[in-house]
Image (tube, rainbow, N blue to C red; front, top):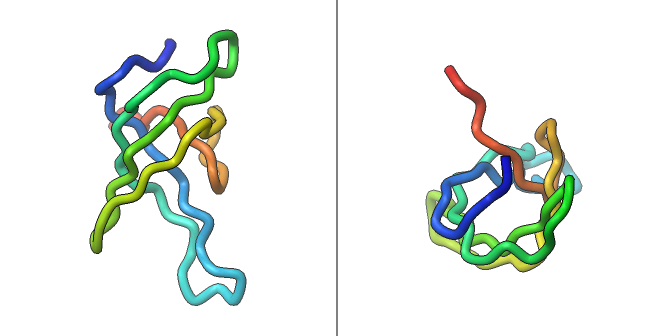
Length: 75
């Protein structure tokens, strides 16, 4: 499935080097699709509990990986 503008995806945060904060999934909205192909990159508006930030050319990862986006799991 390819991302489209406006879709909700998960962005996996990096956490902190000292481990004070663990890598966690964050809700993100696709603002642009920046590459086509089997593993598309996307620009995201990432929503955090204390604010939001924008990140361009975020790579896709099938499994959650820091700095990547993935589809939310179905539960």
